[in-house]
Amino acid sequence: MPATAPSHHPRRRRRTTRLLAAAATVVTAGALAAAALPASANAGESHRGHGGHGHGRYQDVQLLSFNDLHGNLEPPTGSSGRVTEVQPDGTTKTIDAGGIEYLATHLREARKGNRYSITAAGGDMVGASPLLSGLFHDEPTIEALNKLDLDVTSVGNHEFDEGAKELARLQNGGCHPTEGCYTDEEFEGADFPYLAANVLDEKTGKPILKPYWVWKQKGVKVGFIGVTLEGTPDIVSAEGVKGLAFKDEVETINKYAKELQRQGVKSIVALVHEGGFPASSSYNYDCDSPGAGDGISGPIADIAKNVTPQVDALVTGHTHAAYVCTIPDPAGKPRMVTSASSFGRLYTDTTLTYDRATGDIARTAVKSANHVVTRDVPKAPDMTRLIDRWSTLAAPIGNRAIGYVSGDIDRGGTESPLGDLIADAQLAYGKTQDPETDLALMNPGGIRAPLTYAASGGEGDGVVTYAEGFTVQPFANTVNLKDYTGAQLIQVLKEQVSGPNEAAPKILQISSGLTYTLDLTKTGADRVVTDSIRLDGAPIDVNATYRVASNSFLAGGGDGFPTLNEGTNELVGADDLTALEQYLTANSSAADPIEPPAADRITIVQ
Image (cartoon, rainbow, N blue to C red):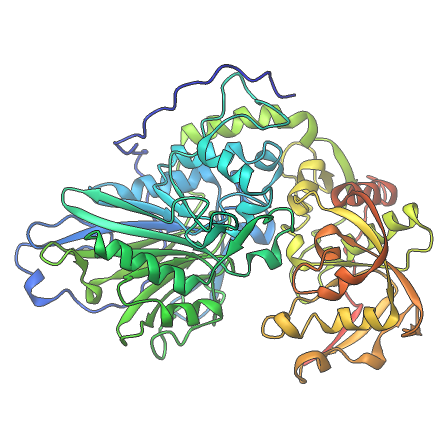
């Protein structure tokens, strides 16, 4: 499919003017109350919540941000394409959201009238992408972000799914080393810098990409430091992070904040691909009720409390949550911390008031709100053309039917219907490789989207296409078989709720025949009730050997399951999407579609 690589094309210069779309209205807003401008700012200054430009000492700078796009160029489907909005009376409603055609329109509309406007992102722009982007190693998404006039982003953990060399290609351009060029033009790479301050080459000890970047306009300077979570090696395949060291987020940000200060850059934003867990699933809830930072927990809360006060705001991500919070910095001053959910469903509009006298941000004037990327605005024509061009290339592969479902098969919940389905598919595949295969385990983070009954294109309702299957399992992990003792199997289940997974449990999805009780009233490993674990109704024999199927990421001990790395007699099979495809094809037809599994294998006590 890829064409022969042509001669190198000169890189185009970065556009200096913003493209403005036809008028479109941003119809939703999540507000965060903030203090007024310093009294001295009122003279000759027009302060606007959406980054208006001022005259005199204080200058509003608009910061538009988003995170965790994951190559979702087309509107995401099912629950992945909706956000929850709290209403004035306390009730909630859901809104269809997302799609790069709509995100472009919303951002271009938001920029109108704002000469001082920056667009930044918090990582995971690519990786775990739907087929439209993933099939082409995410070149379509980088092209779309260039057209979107993204200024800067941090790396996320998924930027390392294909390793540092592939990330460098996304930054610098060039055709894929094995597949060549997909079109008659060489891939030009990202117009924007990827920042990786805490990702070091183990041999040189230096960041593999730029650690920071400075935005400048008419005397206004804002520095950006980009980091990903220190625990990236725990959630990315070993091959993807080979030769790399991931350093502490806080220490790294503080180090480069000092460096920027020495260069005279006093206004600093940290782009942190690590996040928190909000108290509400509604994007527009009051995160500061009853007090600053009370509505957010998790890693980002600790990071924000320890990052130097020299940093004026944190744009975050990774948890796919939505929040706009103030969290006190080490000096006790409130500081804005934001996240815009995922998949391009939201964007954040933050006003940073720049003090020309000091070169710093007047923190008491910072305002921020999340906005829904609604689908009731005109599509950006350039994004539509981009999607159409890549869709034409992907169609012969993506439109092929691989199965049939009778209804939506969701991925939500402690145990999900889709998780059960995928585990059953891997068990069935394992038995084709070794009839002695006993069970299968699937990590929930590897399930990226639901299977929806409604047609995504012209295939008809209930038809599962290869593209839809790819969106569910885009990682190209292999299905591996390993032997474990019964004692090791019990330990694996306990690792779901202990060790690195104690604070935020990762409940594995399990194949038919495996059952147990998860008692959430207990703590740590005791939450998995040992005596309740059964396989086909029989207790687990700690001395017996069990043949287990899992994807290669889990089999290597990923997601905090070190015991899975201790298995023996390994057999490496085909990729996990092939296993799912074979299962759907063998077990469904238009006349007899698969019904959503009951998700009743784990008994939960709360």
